[in-house]
Length: 401
Ligand SMILES: *Cc1c(COP(=O)(O)O)cnc(C)c1O
Image (cartoon, rainbow, N blue to C red; front, top):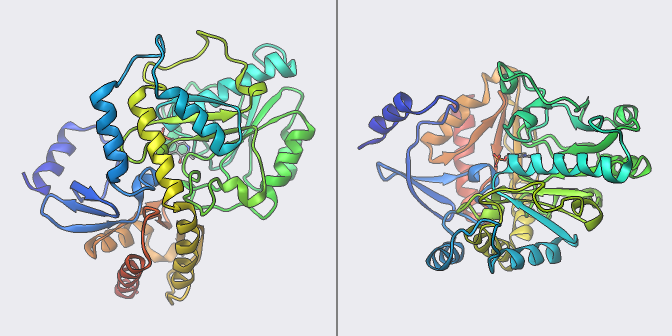
């Protein structure tokens, strides 16, 4: 079947909850994807940062296959020999003392919400069912009913109510609003250190640090959603490091599974994650040996191949080069590491048509909201491949001038 047939089948039989670019991938390796017609395309999205290590990294695929040959699932009713090792390795890597494994990012966000609420009742003494978690305007924390309950994006919420209560909203980057929103019932402040889905929005310098201080002063947990920004994407292991912040709870996912397997985790210290007792929370697949073996290798690849450093170096030089593009359409280029947003002026006619043209040139990008093109290639990318991409980007900006 060719692309046209497959797109037709998808449109007829698949629910229409996405609007993908019309490219049908059939294989991939490293930074490259191949469509069913054999066309080679450079992946400049990395599955929203879930393939930071590149597609089908040989070491991660090997870990996946070897583990699949031994043991894949026990449920947590029994123990397995991979989860304890992943838990320890994640603690060693991050400097926290406990980990709770889940599968998707949204589930890990739900877990962090449950953790903060339980902590508020057990440790802070908030009255039953009164706990609040402050979230930021324009956030993205996933698609579950609770996660969209604190979304401010109308299309994510429309016709999905009633919503989970207890989530006051403050503008991202506004310390005064945060301070004002805190009450004795506040359990936590939940924030993305860089708002990726909102259009690669980087908060003012010192915002996270001061927000963390406000939280500490008020006995409020600081929860960082590093699902997209974490594990090297932004040129540090965690985006919070740019502000020297150690969150009380860190949420990770996406590239924890190396693009091969869905796995997420909530990481914190014992005084926080220790609130759970047996039976109070769980997941059939959470902590399964297949996912844990993949995650262990995915982390090793990030460290041993120095992907954090590569993201920092390649990202800086690529952003410098992007900024030299002269186009009346570009309003701003911003980013950290290899999470880069090109914001177009409203008159440019939207980011989507740029992405469609880039695809014709062999570069796979995705718009975020209407006016921002996101550039987020796998962190293994080399300078010469970025130059290849740059040439295509320049061509498209010239063509659509
Ligand atoms: C992708 C993402 C999520 C949701 O992860 P899923 O695995 O899609 O459920 C949550 N928060 C942030 C910041 C994300 O980028």
